[in-house]
Length: 360
Ligand code: SF4
Image (cartoon, rainbow, N blue to C red; front, side, top):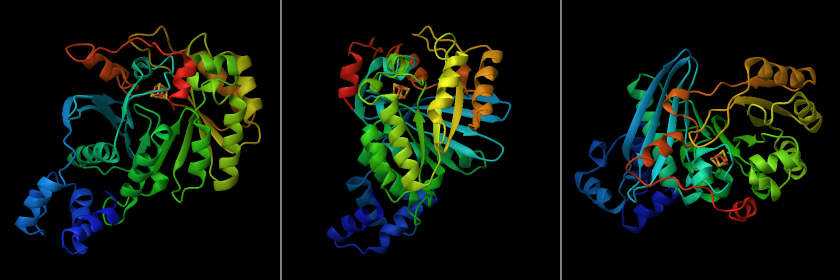
């Protein structure tokens, strides 16, 4: 619930409005794990809320940790009451702590290099299920003596295909009585749901937009991101230009580099041509091999060559080495491992790319 919804919920029960801010303060500011901890609420109210407005009942199915040169990475696999699995990752850096959360169980986009995409969409997550991931990781950061500073929606799912719950989550994180998490510290990632990029540009929240591009030509991009059939590269980049024009904010393009697939120098040149004049930044991400896929990262030299071509063309470019390769931290890998065991198996992709696009 947003703060206003919670105030309404309390008012309907004859309870004072100011309790809503207290509850937000405890649940999000103090990261209380239950109503029992909310000491400024009367005991009778705490008991009533525990029944009428329970906390999202996630359990942690698995947690894996990896010490990396820049800081620790923690990956959590949450289990929902309907026995679905949701991945979230917490990354500690010297200057920030970033939570990467999921917005859907599975994903309708079916990118061919992605373990989550292999299984298709099972269901959308609710606003509460997304907020609960942030809160769980904020508690985990606090236990390590740190505070969460950034949230990126780059886990399982396509945020712009679960639009309203995602926007509502951003509003709840933003609420000053709770986490007070500035929208500028939230990044929404999309594979290119063009109409909702336009909607996002009109929202009051100043979130960051990351677009998973992965290829500059339609043939190649459709092979990697089937959604490209519906909104091809030119339409997607036009939407990004409208977004920049309306918000004045830079767009980040994510480009997963796959050996022998999309790492050729000519493709870097084409990408530079396509992005010329657009306020943007390119993040090159050498791919994580998925258990079910043939994809491998390019050589270091090929990555540097690709990055160099973009930089020479005046495009701000960084290479982001994936975190948590050995703990299956790439999207969908931990879930695939977990469900490939005793749980629900990951199904092979059955839908055509056009059907995947139609599902969005
Ligand atoms: S890479 Fe992202 S958009 Fe593509 S299938 Fe995986 S979760 Fe979905």
